[in-house]
Length: 429
Image (cartoon, rainbow, N blue to C red; front, side, top):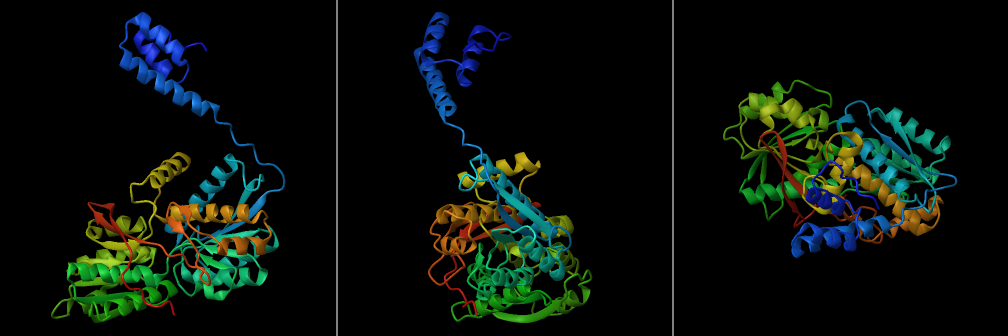
């Protein structure tokens, strides 16, 4: 093989050719001896040559052929959920591309058919019907909020199509029927993680702010109260205030909180992505300087974009998959950045990625894209290795048992604290 280093000195050229795998061990030894290079260096260069040759010898996966296997994805690409649903859709697209580059599913190409639910229940239901009736998808995934998942689920169940919600956390979602699965943990799990974090900090009193228009935020607050008031924590909610999705002025609620005497140890804000940063900023503007906790609705770029410096110190519970330094996470971040020219904006990107991969795994194990076969294979999933954690469905449950990541905003950066498994979790219903 002809070396390609004509512009380099002989030693540098030899090193470049060995690193790139253009020379065999024998060629490296022969040329290195002529140049008087030491034996240890020649041995190391030889190992590089062997590794490169082994990589070159790995056969490329055969290109997928035949009729595509269509997976339908519904995300709120516009509207209030866009800050987490756009990354979710990107993660799903990345997974589909990688699957096709590695031979597809059952040797067939996967086609991800993406529809915008526009963060609107009617638009979401219309998009779901379109995917089933017109695109004839084998299975569905997507939407990262419980309200929209509950709009998709009955349609999918009636049509006999698996629906895997990639980010919605309402633990009642699978109750719709046996074709409905969750990829993330339930709100009872992340709420318990938040309450137990407060216990660990020695905080016993809390002011609670809740968006009373969304299933997600109502579930999160209710489960948080249950766990925080449990006998082993014995915490007390000293004030509860509510607001409506889309509100931009929270001065009335913050005034009520500021008037509390004594002030609570911390605040728990149960809000969706669009209100995350604004509620935090207005709380700090009102002089509420105690710690603020929340759930995965705060896992959005809007927390810092709209909250600014006020977001520093906020701690929220979310999903594993972006913030840790593990080989799987590192590889995912690199692939995502290569394809979209940005780091994953939120962990919902990794959930979308895992969602497509989990469905592909079920179809491969089923040996068919028949919807019922997919359902049965998905229900039998055990220790699927996702970026967001291992996924197993225990008999009779379509919610996986997964750990919770705790993240803190430090100097405007989303900083991983640790993964936790709550000691006690309120029952799902």
